[in-house]
Image (cartoon, rainbow, N blue to C red; front, side, top):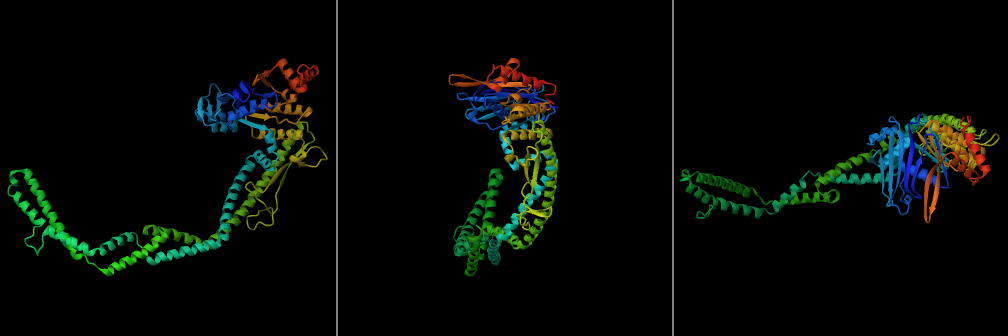
Length: 589
């Protein structure tokens, strides 16, 4: 069941396109026209709608922006509808509107169901909406790496599950091997680092610094270095507050405060305000007495001790030696010592760590070999099914005697003991990588008696197009999406083979929406809807439009594609014959 189809695209000011509407059929839509026009109209516009890269050069010269709008018929239960509603989009009676605006300055905006959304969201929808296949994809599939990806994609969980386990073990093995290499190749550097750390820790341990000791010693040194001045100042302050016994006539602060208190005490009962002041004077007297006593004790306890001062300065010098090398202060030195002790422990444990890593590496290599074997077995089983399905499709595409096979090989290496060269699979040491140990390549035997050759070397242009189309049709059955866009995948095909390509695409359109950009009348004749991109010239301005071909118009277009002459009677007869054959009861199998 088709759960979502593109119904319409509206395009304005995109390249040579000024204003065009592309109405697409739920089944098979063929797009034809002058070389390049159809591709620009459909492929580029659809790419923008589905989150493709926005190139400001696509905007028509003189226009401020290009706008592509699409109308999509969706089932509310489809992944596209669910994701769109999660983003706040609104569906209008089963229809979802998508738009993409590209300014001439390069800015791009996207809207989904009336809601502005990130362009990346359109790309997410594309995964469940449209599969685009073109000649670029064909060239990519000529590479063995892409062929392996295609096989893995076809196999589904049978390969993806063991591949995920393999990838996890592979990453861990790489990490273990890298650490092991560092430990063994940098042994001399690590030994030198350990010696330096050990020397520094010995220096710190010899001094045995205490937290905050540097600040305490600095204060003590300052006090001892100015002991006489401090004692003289304390004695003078004491005399000013409490009096000097050697000067009975002298005036001191305690005597003055006591006199002030006696003066107000006699009359304090007459006014509460004065009583409060009297209390405060009493407090001053007590404070003066306390401070005077402490000054006396401070002066008597202070002792200028040259030996203690020398010892303090010596200790400070030892601490300064440490702070010059290991930290801004003693706190920094102690932090360095703690970190360095941990690092030294790690360095001194290298031998034990090397032994642990070696054991883990060997265990991982054994595990990786087993996972690689399981992955190879799953690929071999999927390759047989995939090749059989593609071969069956080729028979439908006028290559009844062609046969497709997969070659799955491994490259043996000298040994796998180090874990760097390879892993053991089936009793052999073979090269391995992030995707396993297999080298996958697609072979084609075009006819009986021919030797199988890689499709990159053994297939003609027409054969290659049909092989790739067969691959895509097989993918469509195993990993379906609602809409397929084929961009000139029939290049290099002609005659009877082109008829079979058209018939196969029409059959695919039974279960999915198929849009084909083609220059082959044999393919276009099978379409349910035939659109033509037409260019018009008005002076220096070129515009393109889209016209649906029906009845007589479609016959004329097919005649033009066949012979380049719309009014040729022979071409018209051939076109009508093509249409009749495509509509016949056996045309679509």
